[in-house]
Amino acid sequence: MNPGFLIAFEGIDGTGKSTQLPMLAAYLRGEGYGVVETREPTDGPYGRQIRALYSNRSQVTPEQELELFLLDRRQHVEQCVNPALRQGMIVLTDRYYFSTAAYQGAAGCDPAAIFACHDFAPEPDMVVLLVQTPAESVARIQNLRGETLNDFEQQEQLEKVAALFASFSHDCIVRIQAARPVAEVQASIRAAVRQLLAKKGVRCSG
Image (cartoon, rainbow, N blue to C red; front, side):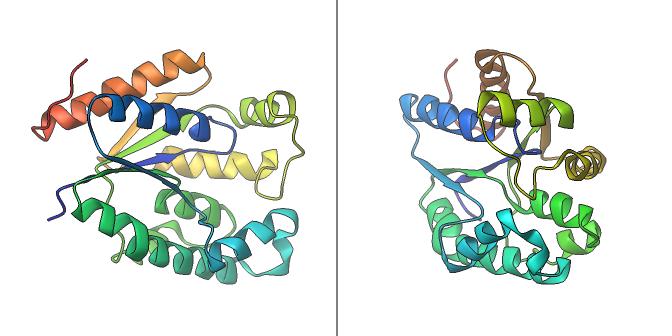
C-alpha cells in the first residue's frame, strides 16, 4: 500500500484545473504536507507527441492517439506518481486516465475498455471533477485566455466529452461546479480534500 495520496483534477478544457491545482498545492504545503504537482500529457517524449496533435489531431487514428496517452501515462506513473506516493507525498495531477476515457472515448474508443487497461495506474484517492457547460468553457478559453481553440477544444467535441464525464460513477469522483468565482471553487475543493484526509485519518486543519 502506498502511504501517499493521489488527487486527480479532471474536467473538460477551460474549467480551471491549471488555476485550482496550484492553489490547492500551496494550501496543503502551508498545512505542512509534502506535495508533488504534475500533469498529463507530460513533457516526456510521448507527451510531446501528444501536444503536437493539438494543432492537427487528424494525423493519427483514435487508436494511435490512445496508445500515445497510454505510453505517456505508463512512464508518468513509473517515474513520477508511484515514487512520490511511496514517499508519502500528496500527488496532484492535472489530468489522469479519466480524461483519456472521456476524450478518447468521444473520439470513438470504448471508455470501459480504456478504464480496463489501466491496471498499471494507481486509482486516485479523489478525482476533483470540475464541471461547467462546454459553452462556458469555450468562452473562457477565447475571452479570458485570449486563445484560439485547439483540436481538442472544439465545442462539438467538448459536448461529447462532457457527456462522458457526466456518465462516470466512480466513488472517488467529487463534482465541483466550476462556473463560479475562483475563490469559491477553491473553497469547495479544500473542503472536499479536508474531508478525504480526515476520513483517512490524516490531520488537516481548517
